[in-house]
Length: 337
Ligand code: RIB
Ligand code: CA
Image (cartoon, rainbow, N blue to C red):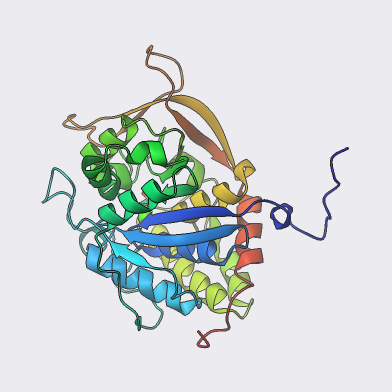
């Protein structure tokens, strides 16, 4: 008979530990994802790679370093990646300084890092780490997919070494950068197209339609702050910043809330029931005048294209919030890193 779970213990206390690597464009929601991955006992965050996206890659790297050090995980190595998309070096302009100053931040509200990035470029690191640990590490990509496409270019065997690729990106019925597209895919559509045809064993796509079902409220930010930990304080500050930005620019429909897109991907790695997925075909539009960067999700079987991606259509908000609250109660107190 299946062992009854001890209700006092979350299910993951007996689950295996997942090794993961995060590819980020830090980024306010990236920072929450990094803290969740670095503090969760069921996860072993092997490394973080950075890419141009929300802001210039150098600033993504600095924000990533300071986030890890703030929660006492400055031991996790950070590798910097591409400063531009693989095809359009002028496309897009870094968003936080041009389009989206209210949701993202050029500099996160935690102390400057003492450490520095690794010397090795991210694509070389990704090729080497997965080749030496085939099918043992999950790759969670929550920025534009430029680093992944570059890694595929230098190492065609890379996709076969990745057991599971989880991508925050795309949309079925929503959008956030053009009427047709979500930012991560739109920011480097050729890279995304290459990733989706590269033959990864398992791809899970967490699009806006799912992340907008896991909204975090200002009241929940107060609860995170009251945890009295560095992670709780930073998460509260960062998510409140996002809430103000969404209220001003793109109201979610639920007052005083914001999605924390990237963290939903990390939570789904720990507890796959946090997202509800369907195995369908996804291709990326790279040429449409009005639709570039669209994830074309064939969930109504309009084509004979084979299924290639587990797309999250829904997310479990309460389970997500409970995990943030549980995990951000861990780690150092503010300022004691
Ligand atoms: O569209 C949301 C995505 O774009 C998130 O990953 C956010 O950090 C930005 O990169
Ligand atoms: Ca991101």
